[in-house]
Image (cartoon, rainbow over all chains, first blue to last red; front, side):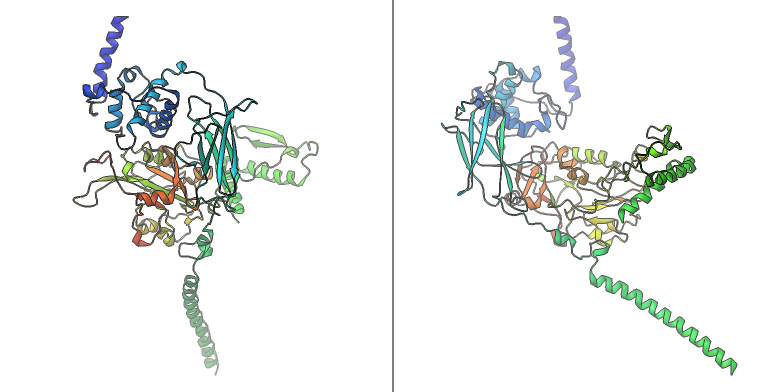
Length: 293
Length: 309
Protein backbone atom coordinates (compact mmCIF):
# COMPACT_ATOMS: atom_id res chain seq x y z
CA UNK A 1 0.00 0.00 0.00
CA UNK A 2 2.76 2.42 0.99
CA UNK A 3 4.60 1.53 -2.20
CA UNK A 4 1.57 2.32 -4.35
CA UNK A 5 1.10 5.67 -2.62
CA UNK A 6 4.77 6.43 -3.16
CA UNK A 7 4.50 5.45 -6.83
CA UNK A 8 1.42 7.59 -7.36
CA UNK A 9 3.02 10.56 -5.65
CA UNK A 10 6.14 10.18 -7.81
CA UNK A 11 3.99 10.06 -10.96
CA UNK A 12 2.06 13.09 -9.76
CA UNK A 13 5.24 14.99 -9.02
CA UNK A 14 6.70 14.26 -12.43
CA UNK A 15 3.49 14.86 -14.37
CA UNK A 16 2.22 18.09 -12.90
CA UNK A 17 5.18 20.27 -13.82
CA UNK A 18 5.18 18.80 -17.34
CA UNK A 19 1.47 19.36 -17.93
CA UNK A 20 1.67 22.93 -16.74
CA UNK A 21 5.10 23.67 -18.11
CA UNK A 22 3.96 27.11 -19.34
CA UNK A 23 2.50 28.06 -16.00
CA UNK A 24 4.76 29.91 -13.63
CA UNK A 25 4.99 28.03 -10.33
CA UNK A 26 3.60 29.53 -7.15
CA UNK A 27 6.27 31.03 -4.97
CA UNK A 28 4.86 31.34 -1.49
CA UNK A 29 7.34 32.48 1.15
CA UNK A 30 7.34 30.86 4.60
CA UNK A 31 6.20 34.16 6.06
CA UNK A 32 3.15 34.34 3.77
CA UNK A 33 2.31 30.68 4.29
CA UNK A 34 2.39 31.13 8.05
CA UNK A 35 -0.07 34.03 8.07
CA UNK A 36 -2.90 33.40 10.52
CA UNK A 37 -6.55 33.47 9.45
CA UNK A 38 -8.12 36.40 11.31
CA UNK A 39 -11.72 35.27 10.79
CA UNK A 40 -13.01 32.39 12.92
CA UNK A 41 -15.02 29.63 11.25
CA UNK A 42 -18.49 30.66 12.43
CA UNK A 43 -21.80 30.03 10.75
CA UNK A 44 -22.49 33.71 10.00
CA UNK A 45 -19.05 34.27 8.46
CA UNK A 46 -19.47 31.21 6.27
CA UNK A 47 -22.50 32.86 4.65
CA UNK A 48 -20.31 35.82 3.63
CA UNK A 49 -17.72 33.41 2.25
CA UNK A 50 -20.33 31.55 0.21
CA UNK A 51 -21.68 34.82 -1.20
CA UNK A 52 -18.25 35.88 -2.41
CA UNK A 53 -17.51 32.40 -3.72
CA UNK A 54 -20.65 32.31 -5.89
CA UNK A 55 -20.00 35.80 -7.18
CA UNK A 56 -16.30 35.58 -7.99
CA UNK A 57 -15.03 31.98 -8.00
CA UNK A 58 -17.80 29.81 -9.50
CA UNK A 59 -17.23 30.98 -13.09
CA UNK A 60 -13.83 29.22 -13.33
CA UNK A 61 -13.76 26.77 -10.43
CA UNK A 62 -17.34 25.55 -10.81
CA UNK A 63 -20.23 25.47 -8.34
CA UNK A 64 -18.75 22.36 -6.70
CA UNK A 65 -15.27 23.95 -6.66
CA UNK A 66 -13.99 20.91 -8.54
CA UNK A 67 -12.25 23.03 -11.18
CA UNK A 68 -14.88 22.38 -13.83
CA UNK A 69 -16.28 25.84 -14.46
CA UNK A 70 -16.42 27.71 -17.75
CA UNK A 71 -12.68 27.00 -18.07
CA UNK A 72 -10.61 24.14 -16.71
CA UNK A 73 -9.04 25.30 -13.47
CA UNK A 74 -7.62 23.99 -10.21
CA UNK A 75 -9.84 21.85 -8.02
CA UNK A 76 -10.34 23.46 -4.63
CA UNK A 77 -11.72 20.36 -2.94
CA UNK A 78 -8.97 17.87 -3.62
CA UNK A 79 -6.38 16.92 -1.08
CA UNK A 80 -3.43 18.78 -2.62
CA UNK A 81 -5.31 22.03 -2.31
CA UNK A 82 -6.79 21.43 1.10
CA UNK A 83 -3.41 20.39 2.55
CA UNK A 84 -2.09 23.94 2.20
CA UNK A 85 -2.08 26.39 5.07
CA UNK A 86 -4.67 29.18 5.16
CA UNK A 87 -1.84 31.68 4.70
CA UNK A 88 -0.68 29.97 1.53
CA UNK A 89 -4.18 30.03 -0.01
CA UNK A 90 -4.57 33.65 1.06
CA UNK A 91 -1.36 34.56 -0.75
CA UNK A 92 -2.51 32.83 -3.94
CA UNK A 93 -5.92 34.50 -3.98
CA UNK A 94 -4.32 37.84 -3.22
CA UNK A 95 -1.49 37.69 -5.78
CA UNK A 96 -3.00 35.63 -8.61
CA UNK A 97 -1.12 33.83 -11.36
CA UNK A 98 -1.75 33.66 -15.13
CA UNK A 99 -5.48 33.07 -15.53
CA UNK A 100 -6.16 33.38 -11.81
CA UNK A 101 -6.66 37.12 -11.33
CA UNK A 102 -5.18 38.86 -8.28
CA UNK A 103 -8.02 39.71 -5.91
CA UNK A 104 -5.89 42.22 -4.02
CA UNK A 105 -7.94 45.22 -5.10
CA UNK A 106 -11.26 43.44 -5.53
CA UNK A 107 -11.73 41.79 -2.13
CA UNK A 108 -10.95 42.95 1.40
CA UNK A 109 -8.62 40.80 3.52
CA UNK A 110 -11.49 39.71 5.75
CA UNK A 111 -13.47 38.64 2.71
CA UNK A 112 -10.61 36.49 1.42
CA UNK A 113 -10.32 34.79 4.82
CA UNK A 114 -14.09 34.15 4.77
CA UNK A 115 -13.79 32.48 1.37
CA UNK A 116 -10.98 30.28 2.67
CA UNK A 117 -13.14 29.29 5.65
CA UNK A 118 -15.96 28.42 3.28
CA UNK A 119 -13.61 26.25 1.17
CA UNK A 120 -12.54 24.42 4.32
CA UNK A 121 -16.16 23.73 5.23
CA UNK A 122 -17.03 22.63 1.69
CA UNK A 123 -15.14 19.37 2.05
CA UNK A 124 -16.55 18.82 5.50
CA UNK A 125 -20.23 19.76 5.23
CA UNK A 126 -21.50 17.04 7.54
CA UNK A 127 -19.74 18.63 10.50
CA UNK A 128 -22.11 21.60 10.36
CA UNK A 129 -25.33 21.69 12.38
CA UNK A 130 -28.49 21.46 10.22
CA UNK A 131 -29.98 24.78 9.04
CA UNK A 132 -33.31 26.01 10.38
CA UNK A 133 -36.39 26.58 8.24
CA UNK A 134 -37.59 30.17 8.11
CA UNK A 135 -40.54 32.01 6.61
CA UNK A 136 -40.37 35.42 5.09
CA UNK A 137 -43.25 37.88 5.05
CA UNK A 138 -43.04 41.10 3.07
CA UNK A 139 -45.07 44.21 3.75
CA UNK A 140 -44.79 47.65 2.18
CA UNK A 141 -45.14 51.20 3.36
CA UNK A 142 -46.70 53.40 0.73
CA UNK A 143 -46.07 56.90 2.07
CA UNK A 144 -42.35 56.58 1.76
CA UNK A 145 -41.92 53.63 -0.57
CA UNK A 146 -40.31 51.01 1.63
CA UNK A 147 -40.28 47.25 1.96
CA UNK A 148 -40.21 45.46 5.29
CA UNK A 149 -39.27 41.80 5.57
CA UNK A 150 -40.31 39.84 8.64
CA UNK A 151 -38.30 36.68 9.23
CA UNK A 152 -39.91 34.17 11.57
CA UNK A 153 -39.94 30.47 12.37
CA UNK A 154 -41.74 28.19 9.94
CA UNK A 155 -44.15 26.89 12.59
CA UNK A 156 -47.36 28.62 13.73
CA UNK A 157 -45.62 30.27 16.72
CA UNK A 158 -43.96 32.74 14.30
CA UNK A 159 -40.97 33.36 16.56
CA UNK A 160 -38.99 36.30 15.16
CA UNK A 161 -35.42 35.60 14.08
CA UNK A 162 -32.97 38.45 14.74
CA UNK A 163 -29.69 39.04 12.87
CA UNK A 164 -30.75 37.32 9.66
CA UNK A 165 -29.29 38.81 6.50
CA UNK A 166 -32.11 39.52 4.03
CA UNK A 167 -31.33 40.42 0.40
CA UNK A 168 -33.75 42.64 -1.50
CA UNK A 169 -33.99 42.58 -5.27
CA UNK A 170 -35.93 44.05 -8.17
CA UNK A 171 -36.71 41.69 -11.04
CA UNK A 172 -35.10 42.70 -14.33
CA UNK A 173 -34.98 41.20 -17.80
CA UNK A 174 -32.07 38.81 -17.21
CA UNK A 175 -31.54 38.83 -13.48
CA UNK A 176 -32.20 40.38 -10.11
CA UNK A 177 -30.97 43.87 -9.26
CA UNK A 178 -29.95 44.35 -5.66
CA UNK A 179 -31.43 47.18 -3.61
CA UNK A 180 -30.71 48.25 -0.05
CA UNK A 181 -27.38 47.79 1.70
CA UNK A 182 -24.95 44.95 1.02
CA UNK A 183 -26.12 43.43 4.30
CA UNK A 184 -29.60 43.99 5.78
CA UNK A 185 -29.79 42.34 9.21
CA UNK A 186 -33.10 41.86 10.97
CA UNK A 187 -33.60 43.54 14.32
CA UNK A 188 -34.79 41.99 17.59
CA UNK A 189 -38.37 41.91 16.23
CA UNK A 190 -37.20 39.89 13.22
CA UNK A 191 -37.88 42.78 10.86
CA UNK A 192 -35.70 44.75 8.47
CA UNK A 193 -36.74 47.67 6.26
CA UNK A 194 -35.23 49.03 3.06
CA UNK A 195 -36.25 52.11 1.13
CA UNK A 196 -37.23 51.65 -2.50
CA UNK A 197 -34.70 53.57 -4.60
CA UNK A 198 -35.67 56.35 -6.99
CA UNK A 199 -35.44 56.21 -10.77
CA UNK A 200 -36.33 52.55 -11.06
CA UNK A 201 -38.10 51.82 -14.31
CA UNK A 202 -41.00 49.40 -14.22
CA UNK A 203 -43.09 48.06 -17.07
CA UNK A 204 -45.30 50.23 -19.29
CA UNK A 205 -47.57 50.93 -16.28
CA UNK A 206 -44.66 51.34 -13.87
CA UNK A 207 -45.13 48.01 -12.09
CA UNK A 208 -42.12 46.36 -10.47
CA UNK A 209 -41.65 43.01 -8.78
CA UNK A 210 -39.70 43.25 -5.54
CA UNK A 211 -38.16 40.16 -3.97
CA UNK A 212 -36.84 39.53 -0.49
CA UNK A 213 -34.61 36.51 0.03
CA UNK A 214 -32.80 34.70 2.77
CA UNK A 215 -29.98 33.03 0.89
CA UNK A 216 -26.47 31.65 1.21
CA UNK A 217 -26.85 31.32 4.96
CA UNK A 218 -25.57 28.36 6.94
CA UNK A 219 -27.89 29.00 9.87
CA UNK A 220 -31.16 29.25 7.92
CA UNK A 221 -32.50 27.52 4.84
CA UNK A 222 -33.27 29.62 1.77
CA UNK A 223 -36.61 31.42 1.74
CA UNK A 224 -38.10 34.06 -0.50
CA UNK A 225 -41.15 36.22 -0.90
CA UNK A 226 -42.21 38.75 -3.52
CA UNK A 227 -44.51 41.74 -3.92
CA UNK A 228 -45.79 43.55 -6.99
CA UNK A 229 -46.09 47.35 -6.71
CA UNK A 230 -46.70 50.28 -9.04
CA UNK A 231 -43.71 52.17 -7.69
CA UNK A 232 -41.46 52.46 -10.70
CA UNK A 233 -41.32 54.99 -13.49
CA UNK A 234 -43.23 54.08 -16.63
CA UNK A 235 -41.14 52.45 -19.32
CA UNK A 236 -40.78 54.61 -22.42
CA UNK A 237 -40.18 52.62 -25.58
CA UNK A 238 -38.91 54.02 -28.84
CA UNK A 239 -40.72 51.68 -31.20
CA UNK A 240 -42.00 54.65 -33.25
CA UNK A 241 -38.41 55.64 -33.92
CA UNK A 242 -37.85 52.27 -35.54
CA UNK A 243 -41.09 52.32 -37.46
CA UNK A 244 -40.57 55.73 -39.06
CA UNK A 245 -39.44 56.23 -42.65
CA UNK A 246 -35.64 56.06 -42.84
CA UNK A 247 -32.93 55.03 -45.26
CA UNK A 248 -32.39 51.86 -43.25
CA UNK A 249 -36.11 51.13 -43.13
CA UNK A 250 -37.51 48.13 -44.95
CA UNK A 251 -39.12 48.50 -48.39
CA UNK A 252 -42.44 49.79 -47.12
CA UNK A 253 -40.69 52.37 -44.94
CA UNK A 254 -38.36 54.04 -47.43
CA UNK A 255 -38.12 57.84 -47.20
CA UNK A 256 -40.58 59.82 -49.35
CA UNK A 257 -37.83 61.78 -51.13
CA UNK A 258 -36.18 58.52 -52.16
CA UNK A 259 -39.45 57.13 -53.52
CA UNK A 260 -40.12 60.35 -55.42
CA UNK A 261 -36.60 60.54 -56.82
CA UNK A 262 -36.32 56.88 -57.87
CA UNK A 263 -39.82 56.66 -59.28
CA UNK A 264 -39.41 60.08 -60.88
CA UNK A 265 -36.35 58.87 -62.78
CA UNK A 266 -38.20 55.75 -63.93
CA UNK A 267 -41.28 57.69 -65.02
CA UNK A 268 -39.11 60.38 -66.70
CA UNK A 269 -37.06 57.92 -68.74
CA UNK A 270 -40.02 55.74 -69.72
CA UNK A 271 -41.93 58.89 -70.57
CA UNK A 272 -39.23 59.97 -73.04
CA UNK A 273 -39.06 56.48 -74.59
CA UNK A 274 -42.85 56.25 -74.96
CA UNK A 275 -42.96 59.78 -76.38
CA UNK A 276 -40.35 58.80 -79.01
CA UNK A 277 -42.28 55.62 -79.91
CA UNK A 278 -45.49 57.63 -80.20
CA UNK A 279 -43.73 60.10 -82.48
CA UNK A 280 -42.27 57.27 -84.60
CA UNK A 281 -45.80 55.98 -85.16
CA UNK A 282 -46.93 59.47 -86.07
CA UNK A 283 -44.07 59.81 -88.57
CA UNK A 284 -44.94 56.41 -90.07
CA UNK A 285 -48.58 57.39 -90.35
CA UNK A 286 -47.66 60.73 -91.89
CA UNK A 287 -45.38 58.87 -94.34
CA UNK A 288 -48.27 56.64 -95.50
CA UNK A 289 -50.49 59.65 -96.09
CA UNK A 290 -47.60 61.32 -97.98
CA UNK A 291 -47.11 58.23 -100.22
CA UNK A 292 -50.85 58.01 -100.94
CA UNK A 293 -50.89 61.62 -102.01
CA UNK B 1 -48.55 37.11 -47.24
CA UNK B 2 -45.72 35.24 -45.42
CA UNK B 3 -47.95 32.37 -44.49
CA UNK B 4 -48.65 31.78 -48.16
CA UNK B 5 -44.95 31.95 -48.93
CA UNK B 6 -44.23 29.33 -46.33
CA UNK B 7 -46.83 26.89 -47.54
CA UNK B 8 -45.55 27.23 -51.10
CA UNK B 9 -41.97 26.66 -49.93
CA UNK B 10 -42.76 23.67 -47.77
CA UNK B 11 -44.72 22.03 -50.58
CA UNK B 12 -41.83 22.61 -52.95
CA UNK B 13 -39.39 21.19 -50.43
CA UNK B 14 -41.66 18.22 -49.88
CA UNK B 15 -41.70 17.44 -53.57
CA UNK B 16 -37.94 17.87 -53.89
CA UNK B 17 -37.25 15.63 -50.94
CA UNK B 18 -39.36 12.78 -52.13
CA UNK B 19 -38.76 13.28 -55.82
CA UNK B 20 -39.25 9.61 -56.60
CA UNK B 21 -42.46 9.58 -54.67
CA UNK B 22 -43.64 12.73 -56.37
CA UNK B 23 -46.54 11.13 -58.14
CA UNK B 24 -47.62 9.27 -55.04
CA UNK B 25 -47.38 12.48 -53.05
CA UNK B 26 -49.61 14.24 -55.55
CA UNK B 27 -52.14 11.48 -55.22
CA UNK B 28 -51.96 11.87 -51.46
CA UNK B 29 -52.43 15.61 -51.60
CA UNK B 30 -55.50 15.25 -53.78
CA UNK B 31 -56.83 12.67 -51.35
CA UNK B 32 -56.04 15.10 -48.52
CA UNK B 33 -58.09 17.89 -50.06
CA UNK B 34 -60.91 15.43 -50.58
CA UNK B 35 -60.75 14.27 -46.97
CA UNK B 36 -60.60 17.85 -45.68
CA UNK B 37 -63.85 18.71 -47.38
CA UNK B 38 -65.60 15.68 -45.92
CA UNK B 39 -66.46 15.23 -42.25
CA UNK B 40 -63.31 13.83 -40.53
CA UNK B 41 -65.36 11.89 -37.99
CA UNK B 42 -67.23 9.96 -40.64
CA UNK B 43 -66.83 6.16 -40.56
CA UNK B 44 -64.06 4.74 -42.73
CA UNK B 45 -64.71 5.35 -46.39
CA UNK B 46 -62.83 2.20 -47.34
CA UNK B 47 -60.57 4.24 -49.60
CA UNK B 48 -56.99 3.55 -48.52
CA UNK B 49 -54.15 5.89 -49.30
CA UNK B 50 -50.42 5.41 -48.86
CA UNK B 51 -48.44 7.88 -46.76
CA UNK B 52 -44.80 8.27 -45.80
CA UNK B 53 -44.47 8.77 -42.03
CA UNK B 54 -41.69 10.45 -40.07
CA UNK B 55 -39.95 7.10 -39.51
CA UNK B 56 -39.57 6.81 -43.26
CA UNK B 57 -42.06 3.97 -43.50
CA UNK B 58 -44.85 3.73 -46.05
CA UNK B 59 -48.17 3.22 -44.29
CA UNK B 60 -51.74 2.77 -45.47
CA UNK B 61 -54.44 4.93 -43.90
CA UNK B 62 -58.12 5.27 -44.56
CA UNK B 63 -58.62 8.65 -46.17
CA UNK B 64 -61.44 9.54 -43.79
CA UNK B 65 -59.07 9.60 -40.82
CA UNK B 66 -56.63 12.11 -42.17
CA UNK B 67 -56.62 15.62 -40.80
CA UNK B 68 -53.97 18.29 -40.98
CA UNK B 69 -52.25 18.74 -37.63
CA UNK B 70 -49.80 21.55 -38.21
CA UNK B 71 -49.76 23.52 -41.41
CA UNK B 72 -46.50 25.33 -40.65
CA UNK B 73 -43.91 22.56 -40.53
CA UNK B 74 -40.90 24.81 -39.90
CA UNK B 75 -40.08 24.67 -36.17
CA UNK B 76 -38.79 28.22 -36.03
CA UNK B 77 -40.30 31.65 -35.81
CA UNK B 78 -39.22 33.08 -39.16
CA UNK B 79 -42.58 34.73 -39.72
CA UNK B 80 -42.11 36.87 -36.59
CA UNK B 81 -38.37 37.31 -36.96
CA UNK B 82 -38.71 40.69 -38.64
CA UNK B 83 -40.59 42.11 -35.66
CA UNK B 84 -38.64 42.88 -32.51
CA UNK B 85 -39.60 41.60 -29.08
CA UNK B 86 -42.05 44.20 -27.68
CA UNK B 87 -40.94 46.51 -24.85
CA UNK B 88 -37.30 45.59 -25.24
CA UNK B 89 -34.19 47.12 -26.74
CA UNK B 90 -31.04 45.18 -26.11
CA UNK B 91 -27.66 46.55 -25.13
CA UNK B 92 -24.26 44.94 -24.61
CA UNK B 93 -21.55 46.39 -22.38
CA UNK B 94 -18.01 45.07 -22.77
CA UNK B 95 -15.64 45.62 -19.86
CA UNK B 96 -12.24 45.74 -21.55
CA UNK B 97 -10.48 45.75 -18.19
CA UNK B 98 -11.57 42.18 -17.58
CA UNK B 99 -10.87 40.55 -20.95
CA UNK B 100 -8.00 38.10 -20.76
CA UNK B 101 -8.39 36.60 -24.21
CA UNK B 102 -9.87 33.32 -22.94
CA UNK B 103 -11.78 33.17 -26.27
CA UNK B 104 -14.60 31.10 -24.78
CA UNK B 105 -17.13 33.54 -26.25
CA UNK B 106 -15.70 33.08 -29.74
CA UNK B 107 -15.58 29.30 -29.46
CA UNK B 108 -19.20 29.16 -28.35
CA UNK B 109 -20.32 31.58 -31.04
CA UNK B 110 -18.54 29.75 -33.84
CA UNK B 111 -19.89 26.40 -32.66
CA UNK B 112 -23.48 27.64 -32.46
CA UNK B 113 -23.50 29.60 -35.70
CA UNK B 114 -21.75 26.98 -37.82
CA UNK B 115 -18.74 29.18 -38.57
CA UNK B 116 -15.30 28.28 -39.86
CA UNK B 117 -12.39 29.34 -37.63
CA UNK B 118 -11.68 32.30 -39.92
CA UNK B 119 -15.27 33.54 -39.84
CA UNK B 120 -16.30 35.79 -37.01
CA UNK B 121 -19.55 37.03 -35.63
CA UNK B 122 -17.41 38.12 -32.75
CA UNK B 123 -13.67 38.52 -32.72
CA UNK B 124 -11.28 39.21 -29.85
CA UNK B 125 -8.69 41.64 -31.16
CA UNK B 126 -5.38 42.68 -29.69
CA UNK B 127 -5.35 46.46 -29.65
CA UNK B 128 -2.63 49.03 -29.18
CA UNK B 129 -3.87 52.56 -29.67
CA UNK B 130 -0.54 54.35 -29.96
CA UNK B 131 3.17 53.89 -29.38
CA UNK B 132 3.18 54.62 -25.66
CA UNK B 133 -0.18 53.16 -24.62
CA UNK B 134 -0.57 49.67 -23.20
CA UNK B 135 -2.06 46.94 -25.37
CA UNK B 136 -5.36 45.31 -24.45
CA UNK B 137 -7.82 42.77 -25.82
CA UNK B 138 -11.06 43.96 -27.35
CA UNK B 139 -13.99 41.65 -28.17
CA UNK B 140 -15.76 43.12 -31.18
CA UNK B 141 -19.32 42.15 -32.10
CA UNK B 142 -21.72 43.61 -34.59
CA UNK B 143 -22.57 46.96 -32.98
CA UNK B 144 -26.31 46.66 -33.81
CA UNK B 145 -26.40 50.34 -34.76
CA UNK B 146 -29.58 52.39 -34.47
CA UNK B 147 -28.60 54.06 -37.74
CA UNK B 148 -27.13 51.04 -39.53
CA UNK B 149 -25.12 51.77 -42.70
CA UNK B 150 -25.28 48.10 -43.73
CA UNK B 151 -29.08 48.05 -43.85
CA UNK B 152 -29.14 51.23 -45.94
CA UNK B 153 -27.19 49.66 -48.78
CA UNK B 154 -28.88 46.25 -49.01
CA UNK B 155 -30.57 46.15 -52.42
CA UNK B 156 -32.82 43.17 -51.67
CA UNK B 157 -34.15 43.91 -48.16
CA UNK B 158 -32.25 40.90 -46.80
CA UNK B 159 -30.74 42.65 -43.81
CA UNK B 160 -33.03 44.60 -41.53
CA UNK B 161 -33.31 46.34 -38.18
CA UNK B 162 -35.90 45.30 -35.62
CA UNK B 163 -37.62 47.45 -32.99
CA UNK B 164 -35.66 45.69 -30.25
CA UNK B 165 -32.46 47.05 -31.78
CA UNK B 166 -31.20 43.85 -33.38
CA UNK B 167 -29.86 43.89 -36.94
CA UNK B 168 -30.39 40.53 -38.63
CA UNK B 169 -29.83 39.03 -42.05
CA UNK B 170 -32.09 36.66 -43.97
CA UNK B 171 -29.90 34.24 -45.92
CA UNK B 172 -32.85 33.22 -48.07
CA UNK B 173 -33.04 36.75 -49.48
CA UNK B 174 -29.30 37.55 -49.52
CA UNK B 175 -27.84 37.61 -53.04
CA UNK B 176 -24.22 37.83 -51.87
CA UNK B 177 -23.46 41.29 -53.27
CA UNK B 178 -21.46 42.15 -50.14
CA UNK B 179 -22.47 45.84 -50.20
CA UNK B 180 -23.19 45.54 -46.47
CA UNK B 181 -19.68 44.25 -45.77
CA UNK B 182 -18.28 47.28 -47.58
CA UNK B 183 -20.62 49.66 -45.77
CA UNK B 184 -20.00 48.41 -42.23
CA UNK B 185 -17.42 50.65 -40.51
CA UNK B 186 -16.82 47.98 -37.83
CA UNK B 187 -16.03 45.09 -40.21
CA UNK B 188 -18.59 43.07 -38.32
CA UNK B 189 -19.80 40.90 -41.19
CA UNK B 190 -18.20 37.95 -42.92
CA UNK B 191 -18.92 36.14 -46.13
CA UNK B 192 -19.41 32.43 -46.81
CA UNK B 193 -16.86 32.02 -49.57
CA UNK B 194 -16.87 28.23 -49.22
CA UNK B 195 -19.34 25.60 -48.16
CA UNK B 196 -19.96 26.33 -44.46
CA UNK B 197 -18.54 24.15 -41.71
CA UNK B 198 -20.47 20.93 -41.07
CA UNK B 199 -22.65 21.56 -44.16
CA UNK B 200 -23.48 17.83 -44.25
CA UNK B 201 -24.63 17.82 -40.65
CA UNK B 202 -27.03 20.71 -41.20
CA UNK B 203 -28.52 19.32 -44.40
CA UNK B 204 -32.31 19.44 -44.28
CA UNK B 205 -32.40 21.60 -41.14
CA UNK B 206 -34.99 24.37 -41.47
CA UNK B 207 -33.44 27.83 -41.75
CA UNK B 208 -33.72 29.99 -38.65
CA UNK B 209 -33.20 33.72 -39.27
CA UNK B 210 -32.67 34.48 -35.60
CA UNK B 211 -29.84 31.96 -35.37
CA UNK B 212 -28.70 32.40 -38.97
CA UNK B 213 -28.27 28.64 -39.28
CA UNK B 214 -27.79 26.70 -41.54
CA UNK B 215 -25.30 28.97 -43.24
CA UNK B 216 -25.38 29.12 -47.00
CA UNK B 217 -22.44 29.43 -49.39
CA UNK B 218 -22.45 32.79 -51.17
CA UNK B 219 -24.29 34.71 -48.45
CA UNK B 220 -23.25 37.15 -45.74
CA UNK B 221 -23.31 36.16 -42.07
CA UNK B 222 -23.25 38.33 -38.96
CA UNK B 223 -23.74 38.49 -35.20
CA UNK B 224 -27.41 38.08 -34.24
CA UNK B 225 -27.15 39.09 -30.56
CA UNK B 226 -28.36 35.47 -30.14
CA UNK B 227 -31.88 36.58 -31.03
CA UNK B 228 -33.11 32.98 -30.74
CA UNK B 229 -31.96 32.83 -27.11
CA UNK B 230 -33.34 36.28 -26.31
CA UNK B 231 -36.76 35.12 -27.49
CA UNK B 232 -36.55 32.46 -24.76
CA UNK B 233 -35.41 35.05 -22.19
CA UNK B 234 -31.86 33.71 -22.01
CA UNK B 235 -28.61 35.65 -22.16
CA UNK B 236 -26.69 35.43 -25.47
CA UNK B 237 -24.30 32.54 -26.06
CA UNK B 238 -21.12 34.64 -25.80
CA UNK B 239 -22.28 36.52 -22.71
CA UNK B 240 -22.90 33.39 -20.66
CA UNK B 241 -19.75 31.64 -21.94
CA UNK B 242 -17.29 34.26 -20.64
CA UNK B 243 -15.37 33.09 -17.56
CA UNK B 244 -13.96 36.56 -16.80
CA UNK B 245 -17.11 38.64 -16.36
CA UNK B 246 -16.42 40.81 -19.40
CA UNK B 247 -19.99 41.05 -20.70
CA UNK B 248 -23.04 42.82 -19.36
CA UNK B 249 -26.27 42.42 -21.31
CA UNK B 250 -29.70 43.88 -20.75
CA UNK B 251 -32.67 45.98 -21.74
CA UNK B 252 -32.06 49.72 -22.28
CA UNK B 253 -35.67 50.61 -21.51
CA UNK B 254 -35.29 48.99 -18.09
CA UNK B 255 -31.91 50.65 -17.46
CA UNK B 256 -30.51 47.32 -16.24
CA UNK B 257 -27.72 45.06 -17.45
CA UNK B 258 -26.78 41.63 -16.12
CA UNK B 259 -23.26 40.25 -15.99
CA UNK B 260 -23.15 36.92 -17.82
CA UNK B 261 -20.57 35.43 -15.47
CA UNK B 262 -21.54 36.55 -11.98
CA UNK B 263 -25.25 37.07 -12.72
CA UNK B 264 -25.05 40.44 -10.98
CA UNK B 265 -27.54 43.02 -12.30
CA UNK B 266 -26.65 46.71 -12.23
CA UNK B 267 -28.02 49.97 -13.57
CA UNK B 268 -26.80 50.63 -17.12
CA UNK B 269 -26.57 54.39 -16.63
CA UNK B 270 -24.58 54.03 -13.41
CA UNK B 271 -22.26 51.47 -14.93
CA UNK B 272 -21.49 53.70 -17.91
CA UNK B 273 -21.19 56.87 -15.83
CA UNK B 274 -18.92 55.37 -13.18
CA UNK B 275 -16.60 53.72 -15.70
CA UNK B 276 -16.67 56.31 -18.51
CA UNK B 277 -18.29 53.97 -21.01
CA UNK B 278 -17.98 54.81 -24.68
CA UNK B 279 -19.03 53.52 -28.09
CA UNK B 280 -16.86 52.79 -31.11
CA UNK B 281 -16.57 55.43 -33.85
CA UNK B 282 -19.21 57.64 -32.24
CA UNK B 283 -18.50 60.44 -34.74
CA UNK B 284 -19.94 58.40 -37.62
CA UNK B 285 -23.40 58.79 -36.15
CA UNK B 286 -24.14 55.08 -36.39
CA UNK B 287 -25.45 55.01 -32.78
CA UNK B 288 -24.25 51.51 -31.77
CA UNK B 289 -25.95 49.35 -29.14
CA UNK B 290 -22.60 48.08 -27.84
CA UNK B 291 -20.79 50.04 -25.15
CA UNK B 292 -17.20 49.62 -23.99
CA UNK B 293 -15.70 50.28 -20.58
CA UNK B 294 -12.05 51.40 -20.88
CA UNK B 295 -9.26 48.85 -20.20
CA UNK B 296 -8.57 49.94 -16.64
CA UNK B 297 -6.82 47.91 -13.90
CA UNK B 298 -5.71 45.16 -16.28
CA UNK B 299 -4.52 42.16 -14.33
CA UNK B 300 -2.72 40.76 -17.33
CA UNK B 301 -1.16 43.13 -19.83
CA UNK B 302 -0.82 41.34 -23.16
CA UNK B 303 2.40 41.43 -25.14
CA UNK B 304 2.36 42.42 -28.78
CA UNK B 305 2.87 39.33 -30.89
CA UNK B 306 0.77 37.42 -28.40
CA UNK B 307 -2.22 36.90 -30.71
CA UNK B 308 -3.76 33.48 -31.00
CA UNK B 309 -5.16 33.63 -34.49
